[in-house]
Image 1: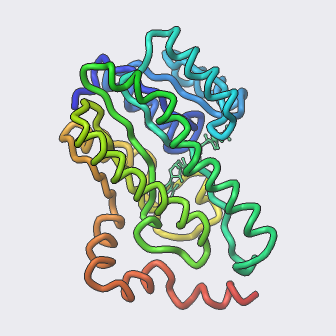
Image 2: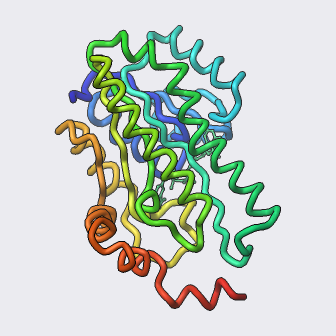
Length: 255
Ligand SMILES: NC(=O)c1ccc[n+]([C@@H]2O[C@H](COP(=O)([O-])OP(=O)(O)OC[C@H]3O[C@@H](n4cnc5c(N)ncnc54)[C@H](OP(=O)(O)O)[C@@H]3O)[C@@H](O)[C@H]2O)c1
């Protein structure tokens, strides 16, 4: 699909992968609107990239998202909805079944899963009315294989991945023009992974792969290790589990 001249809304665009996406979509000739919960972060992004339109909005808050829709409609609407906002709460040392885990799991589902469905529901008719439009949902390498350290985050991304695949097929069957992309990042160096010592790619590398995938209408965009893990998980599920969860982390889980 063509990016030049399109208007894209990126949720959680004030930092990390979202901010890098804003930068690269602007460079591709798109008009870019970003959202987030933190006004100061959005303003800092605007200072860096003055062409950005910034709108404070929380994806899990219904009132906020309706106000976001009205504001976007008044600006002329969007062609691409890029659901990037997400949170992850590592469960390391927390055990697996307790109040803290439950609280984090609800928060992750509200933002990573229900937040996406809420925005898609609000924007779908607008997207259907455009000549060429798209939804991009950000899942994860952990939607393929769950991590012992991030069980509820992994589950939220698998839920989103299943939803994304069905959404794509449904829209295809109904004969619409809305393309549905799924981005599966590996570990990317952002605030979210600051505490992790794993091998990481840069947000710049990830977003380059995303844009290249969009231009080729490659609807499932697995990047870096997510490509390899996809095939390993299909044919050797136990090996894939052990690759994501090396024995060396068992000791820290027991602490
Ligand atoms: N980094 C990785 O290794 C990795 C790997 C796989 C998938 N991902 C996914 O990639 C996406 C971006 O992650 P990242 O690494 O760039 O994380 P990040 O640096 O923590 O950025 C997340 C962004 O989402 C925004 N956000 C969080 N909750 C929100 C809400 N309720 N409403 C609106 N905005 C919200 C945050 O801004 P505010 O706090 O201002 O709201 C922030 O700008 C996420 O969906 C994440 O799950 C990341």
